Length: 292
Image (cartoon, rainbow, N blue to C red; front, side):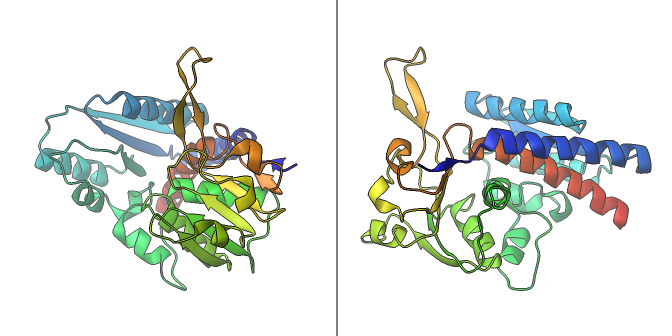
């Protein structure tokens, strides 16, 4: 049976480390890291995420700068808001909750965030540096960074191993494949146009599943002893639950747990790590300001 990687426990360790760093910054340099969380409109799921991030900030002592904007804000007004936060020395990280309303160009808004405050790691310059040998981005996207942290804190060696990433999104698949490459893995990416994906996945020592397809990866896709990080969060109907649904990953947990060496559950695996890495990126941003 696979060793289950407890993302909740590892994320709790990271939060304790971040809280200690925040306290040290405050007492030594009189700097309190500040994270601006910008939300446009009133999408229920976005509000849930934003509240979670703001609550996490409060827990570790990071100052949360709440920017709640109306659904019908113009693109120019949103850009002006981002520029205001760029210029505010008390703000060390800026996060614009996606998706944005249809009339706003997401790429434009993300590009307007100062690269020094891009704690989500989505600025084209940060992603570009991530893709280049011998260059380091100022920030790495939170979910991919969380995946790597789960591997390293579970004692999984990446160097020299074969890694397969299932999915090629800008948010997870692409950046996590670049991080694995930087860590000296040999990386393949499997996507919706890949013929016979299971034969490629079967060769992997490390599998990162980020395809957004409920329980797509079965036990017979997995090389015995492989480490499997399941990024997927999909809701499937479940009449036994009060909500009428339950959350599952991209991996068939019951099936894969009999074959894999390491496996993250959903929920309780990668999810808590994403917020943990956001807090860590914010503190890193504040520390960089002091050094410079």
